[in-house]
Image (cartoon, rainbow, N blue to C red; front, side, top):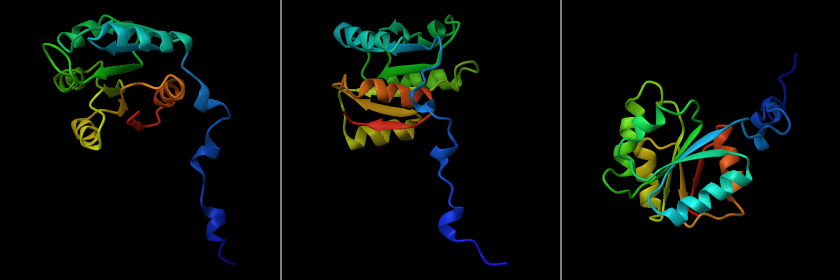
Length: 156
């Protein structure tokens, strides 16, 4: 018996994914946006609404766990880093300590988009990073990818 060609034995993980999976947003998805700037929230809410995603809003990391616990469903948290009262890093630690919420993906969203900030977010336990200003042309694909479990670490 001859050895198989190594190129034939390499599997493409994307090929095992059902067609269209990457573009599917979970039905009735809910995203919690933690953002203190009203204009930024309105932009994010409109882009999520265009995708058919329900969003909730919190203006600070303070009491975010208590608020998130009231939501019947939560698929993603978009967390600004610079927030009043408690920043995104403090809120992240509290969410990760919550038994119910610890597996919800949390993506850092910040105007401080740099490789240093991205590394800090990754090292702190965020599941992704989106730099501001958000790009309305790329945002729908970024959100779809995040919701199907793909990591998204992008500066703008």
